[in-house]
Length: 186
Image (cartoon, rainbow, N blue to C red):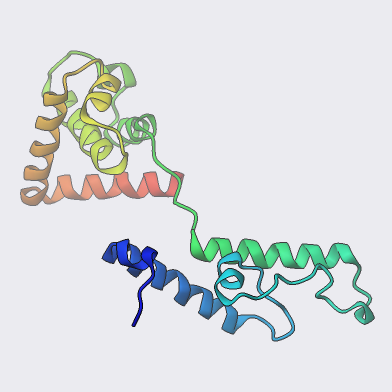
């Protein structure tokens, strides 16, 4: 079986991704109407077929060319959405801080202040933990958002909350409640 240059240098994960994409395209093609061509460039290039003409909706139904173009664009966007789905909206560090402030009933200035009282440290550590796990930001970026703290402070907070979460069910419940509030807000 001869192999092409492209398939010889493709990694196994690239081959799996390509196979998954082809499978999604096959499923979409099976769902499509028989008289509705699929405007998928990879399928037409692979099969050597000519892309469909703009007048694929029959004129005897009273459909104008605008309706045909709109129908094709809807199919195209549906295919693109299947192949490359939208990512969920990202949560920002500020959103996490606001949710923790509401849940723990502390002010924003207290949360980012240099004070180290127990009533402020725990909400701050929870917010740092959530910021680390719910955002793509690095430890130094998270530390800067919490009053210019060092990345090791953020790392300590994350480890501390991870340890406490397994032992304290009320803390685990608080974290879940804050995460649910963030999910509803997003």
